[in-house]
Image (cartoon, rainbow, N blue to C red):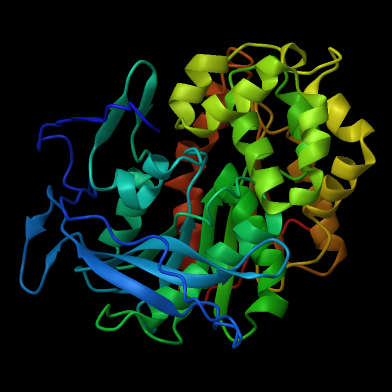
Length: 418
């Protein structure tokens, strides 16, 4: 955006040895072939470049805890058209001490924002970025990624397809094809047909839920051992209703911008819903990362952005053009073919806990193996999203990590299905 000033905030090297930071030049993010007469193969790599981890420990043959590459790879957009995405491939230096070949996690991050500078492959190059006056960003998933690398598990982190925030089909494909691409990256030390787990929380949980549903038909060749689905958005309308008036309104701008990008046929419907303030909201939020969007629009009612004063959920549900698309994007339309760990909690003040609980029942009804982990924690400052964010560290590095290792070590997956 013209006139934006980017300030990179220096961080002491004493913070953590696991911070994945690189000082390399940017990789091309739009190296798309001109000729699509022969459809590209999803997961094929278009370009790659190494990323140096500035706070890593130099070792022979690389850097601890991982050698990193940024890749551009082929994938499939929401309506089945070929497109591209970027991802960061992390090849750990520690050996895998579990059973079989070195495993791979296709890691889907939580909400970062849809602006290019919010992507993981950008954020891992710096600990912190700041765009005045409010836009600040960091790669907050580094703890979970680092814990996997320390165990010798390879990790690929998709940046998603541009402008596809909570767009179900597109997010799922990006997660799946990131795994395919990581296994095809030369000299990465990742087995070409090795075991895979999908992992994600919040937006990442939604993306992984979609990937788990789509993998059986879209990528049956993958040796998918399971999917960790943390606090997933199941129904977009329920999310808007439940989070109304909280800190997450700015993320609604990410979604609406992505909705009209992925489904241009609803652009006029969305435009008709919004006031002038609402249209400005779309542009402002789309240029910010999640913290900036929260600070700019947190605690505001969504009806302050609509033309007729109804809430965002009400106008999206009332218009058949948007309602039909949102219905198609609801999770639970297909059963996963590999085991699931599905996480929710009664203190979640962003994603309505009733939705993952119902999703567990729906998936169980298809014959899927589902372990529902439902945390009975008290609500803390409703609307602050504290409840939503504490679930991840509680489960992610304890029960989730054990569940992950068990999948790679051939232990039978638990199930809470009746």
